[in-house]
Length: 129
Image (cartoon, rainbow, N blue to C red; front, side):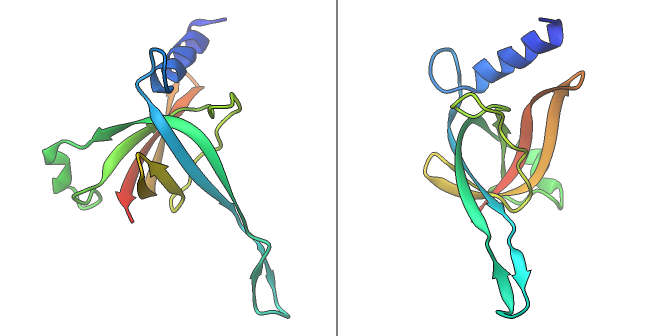
């Protein structure tokens, strides 16, 4: 196991729930797009799966709200690269819905944070609503 793998494992522990982790439960709703049915005139077959992961909420500094992209009330969410069942967490996409501490938020922006190409998770900009 190399340095980068150890760094990834340390990040997973820190973002985890319980033990030495500082994370909380995060429910990520992932919707798979359906197929357009021209006879029915609508999209059919879309499914939504709720995945249970973990992450840490971090508020933006007051100076960040001067940006046109960050709206007052937005916050950052560092999401673990693995789900609580130990499987890999799929990459979140803008528009995905997340429930963190009974608060429903939408993903606005996604930035991976990597350690020399080792996926250590995602830094999300999220917004209420």
